[in-house]
Image (cartoon, helix red, strand yellow):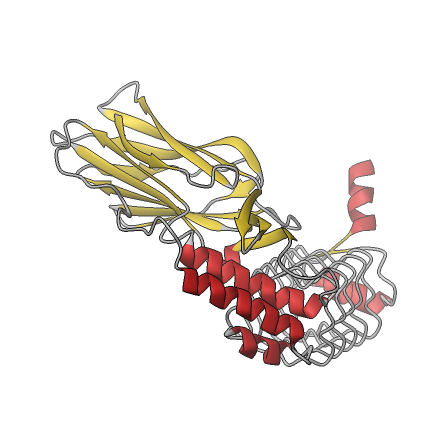
Length: 369
């Protein structure tokens, strides 16, 4: 197997390569993905930003040979193979209660490539969406007194811009061949080498417009930024934001960071908050009926008087969360973790345990025994 093309333009963020090893008993190759994830700085608008990934998709296209995927796991990420005979994909997400993909030189055995008489062509890409990109730091792009609400909207604005103008169609890609492959082209050869200056000017103008806006209301700020409030906030950083009473029902909020946010009486009904970080957040009186909250982290936060009827809290972490008069009726709590919860009644505990919830004290007792 020989390398036709490899491009890792942001190697501090994503660095990948494919290796092939001969199968010991048949005309086949074992494919192994080497991949690393970290954070990377990038200059932008006279300042710079630091970014990392929350999730992404590795895609493998196989031409003129057969590929049989193998179930496997990296040490610090989860992967889910899916696809047709010719196209395969693995979704990478951080482990629960982990903010970013971070892995150094991890190896994932993808599967077995059955060789044919004709040349075999492999195309591998790593693709991300704005919801999978997080801005972890910034310098020189706005004044330090920006409010958390406005910072959250600019965060999503920057994520969308970076993905559209720098990380699409893929952030990393490569091509390999087995045999003498005569006809092939560089991937994304029409990808622009420079950015449109007008788009950068528009981005800068939007940042100033949001900073100077006389409102802290999320929907109004989204409108100024040209963001769809129901779809474009996923993966956002709402650290310390104040969203009391905000209407956020039916909203995509997967992987959002709400640490320390004020979310009292906010409406999250039927919203998707899977993998959300809500540590120290005040959700007192929040409306979370039928919300998806799988793997969400509520530690040391408050759900007092919150409505969680029919929500899905599977594998969520609620250690130390205040639950005074919270309504968990009909909620799915399979493997949800509780413990040291102010306001937890005997009846509430029994009901939660009967539905598969786990309590820290009980787990400690099991370990000791």
